[in-house]
Amino acid sequence: MTTEGTTLSVIKADVGGFVGHSSMHEALLEEAKECLGDAEQRGLLIDFHVTRCGDDLELIMSHRRGVANTEIHGLAWSTFEECTAVAEGLNLYSSGQDLIRAPSPGGLIRGAGPGVAEMELVERKGETVIVLMADKTSAGAWNLPLYKMFADPFNTAGLVIAPGMHEGFWFEVHDVKEHKKIVFETPEDIYDLLLFIGAPGRYLIKAVYCKVGKEIAAVSSTERLSLIAGRNVGKDDPVCIVRCQEQFPAVGEVLEPFSWPYLVQGFMRGSHWGPLMPVAVRESNPTRFDGPPRAVALGFQLSNGRLIGPRDMFDDPSFDEARHMCNTVADYLRRHGPFEPHRLPLGEMEYTTLPLVMEGLKGRWEDL
Image 1 (spheres, rainbow, N blue to C red):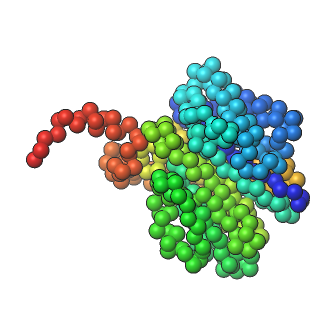
Image 2: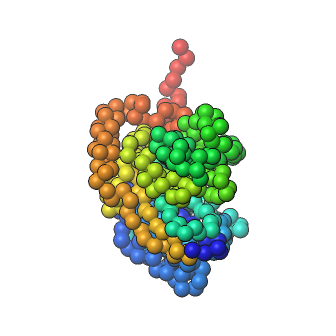
């Protein structure tokens, strides 16, 4: 345990798929490990873990430099560039897909394409964190589980019986289309909170804070690739960091929302609703209709900034029923083919390739 601030930075990008968008070639993971290993030797990082979820490269890094640090963001960007070069050498699919534009003049990569979730904390005794990663889905995928973890007593018993949680939490919600934010207080503002986060294509939970001690509890990536690029460049495939135990939900309360495969946007061509399947890292290879969308959870203990772990939290037979239900729901939705509600409504399709098809038919419409 340390009284010095530790920063966790989870930064992800799709830099090349193997085969198609289904998985990641081992050579990209090895290249990323070399890049971050060099940074650790130079003292930039305390520790790191490189992993994947589907075809997304996930960099989990601990350091002392605070959030939104240009050196850390620069390290992530250069790592993605090096891995893109490896992907191009192997002729992997859609190499460098998420590297949409150069980092900001200051060197930050928010808005450049990669997803970013960061938090700075003072380690508690027994500091427990879970890193959530998803593939084939959008940035709003964490709205429902974060609500259930931190505001639903039917999911989280600690909201009722644990003194450190009984006062509730603050939810920071971003409007990603109007570039605004609002903070809701729970349980007082639950109805107002649900009014907005029930529309996860626009209103996203960015962070959750504990009222007791005013500590950061969770943070997610809210980058919307289509809004950055102005066109379809794949789904956002978000990441999220959640602290557990004591004044935060227990590990089991953090994982419980995923025992039910709720629907998320994404699936094939980022244009369909599909059930989110909780899986072990080794099973995060979405191949059926580029899905179903996948979620991975890695657990760590923090010790003076060192990442003790990970434990693959969804590598557990207690999630077998969720996976079975997910396949059943996917069967049901797939039979709708190009019809809603499987296909996203037109308002959510404006940044896919559908407008190009519609434009080609524009001259064939006649007045009634």
